[in-house]
Image (cartoon, rainbow, N blue to C red):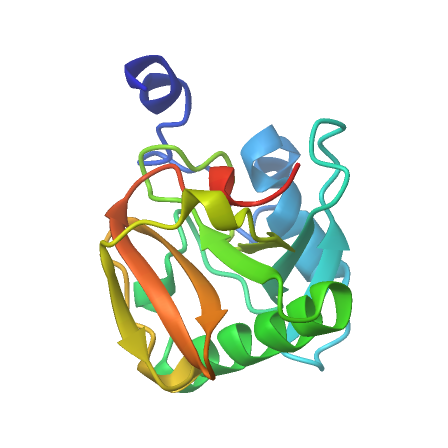
Length: 170
């Protein structure tokens, strides 16, 4: 984990949409994609290009910011749009077997916020979750990651982790 954390230090994110030359960095690739999108809808989707994750999609906000852009930098409405769109896409792709994962700041490899969408590996369920009624109640992570999946009409939100996308089928 320490090796991953050292490799993924986003504290000095170079992305600045007002300076196109900064967007050439690998960690700015999702920012570049966001800038290519039309103004609406507020959230767009891309297939994860990692060949080891063929079953994954990403939900990405269209809005961009300079430097490291976190969910906590978004307004409540922007976060609600992101979670709502991600859940809708997850249901389209996986029915009731979906999960969403947002990695923590220590293991992120992109400056642009994004949510991983995939099929939930039910065997990884743990007891460190809170139950919420919908996307408007998903807590705002402060540098930590989180993962979300449906259970009996509610959502289990697992918080306090860094690497979360491992709960999704590759």
